[in-house]
Length: 179
Image (cartoon, rainbow, N blue to C red; front, side, top):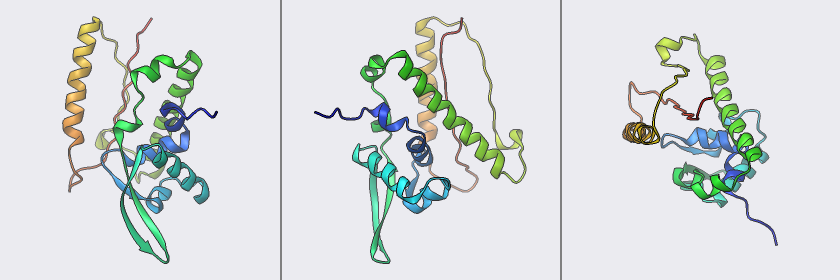
């Protein structure tokens, strides 16, 4: 009997994580458009990773059109399907958590590298790029309230559609106790 892959096994692969990141913010992209953002990934490998994500219900086909005898599919992210459940997080070993966190941070580093490498002129202030660390003294309830407020604000902004003057931005959060 073969064990089915967990959500963590599926989404925390470096290439699949980049595909997911490419679709964040309500984007709908074809395989060719995804390939533009992943030039180091072979076409065959990209199709396999997309098929894995689609088979797990993390990507959905939102459009199809015939192109030169083939069908070009447009994909969208089903964000809720890509998130790890509380049960799955609780079942992970410390080593699996370290691996997951490393994949997450590597994805952030890759995004930052692409920003620096592709910007005509790197200007963190103009582009609103920042990375900061702050220590807060919070009770468990105060932390829960802060996270709920932050989530509400992010969800409101996540409803924004692309428009003139808007630029797609990635916001990542990491919360952990400090010694």
